[in-house]
Image (cartoon, rainbow, N blue to C red; front, side, top):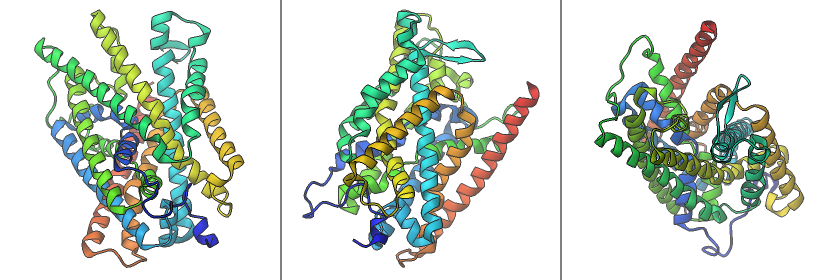
Length: 440
């Protein structure tokens, strides 16, 4: 293997003979679906409050379709070239600048998500504080009272050591298919509980009237509508796992089939949680839906359902964590050690990077429990690049001559929509943050 190709090789090489030891389509579907759902499911209901039910559902369909097109670009250009990683394909099209840009975006997006996952898990288990005062008690402290063993620091540490560490030490994405299956099942349980609660509220006449279209007033401007787009784009960003999963799957057609099935499944989940979450809480819905479920309930049954929702989602995030850690680890290794042997063949390097990421994520989640705005801006920007701008740019660059006229038109549309909506959304968010600061 030449140094140029070896620098962009995946964590594990292709297995030979062909067809031996390949991953299954069902495993790929669960891994992709788990990557997509992630923490994005919590923000989907809030987009309905901003843009209304019909536009939000339309956006979910459009972004899902564009995600499928962008993945097809990545798969096709991977097969027509020598590189078999996302950064490698960008390197073929734009040189070292392209590969570094991809690696940086993956590192920013995934590391930010891992830290946020730990923050959410800590909030669910042990609660959080704002300004030195307790904002809410976590499930463990509600059940057993306040003790040292259910503090944020200790509860997150237990999760990291006994749940996440064994999973991140696995060296093949395919081996995560069982945890991904459980993760998807937990997400469905979460949606199912929300559905039951919404139906009960509907029978009792306690549901809120949803907005079918956006209402522009003093609190919601026309430009605020664009802030919903990056949220949905980030919710469908899984492109950093296309190559790790696709290489182990073997056939490109199998990968595209797995992607389509996963996108349909996740779109259905987003539809359900968006509608039933909005019916339950209406305009009082928060950007993080778990905050709404953290409020006290009038009945014992309602309290049990609230705890079940929070715990099922915390467990879901624990199982999503290794799927985001996998491409993050390989991109860091590729960035720092481009000429070293494959990561899987160097146990010392593999363990050092894996443990360093886990320790850093834990310390960041403990030290900075409120970093939402930073990752909202930076994460959304990098997610848009990975999901649409980079695949579109690869198709337009067309170094291997495989793009059709239709591909170039779709690529142009993706890039223009991504750039325009992101600029407007980020500008609006900055304006709103500055406005809130002046009010305080």
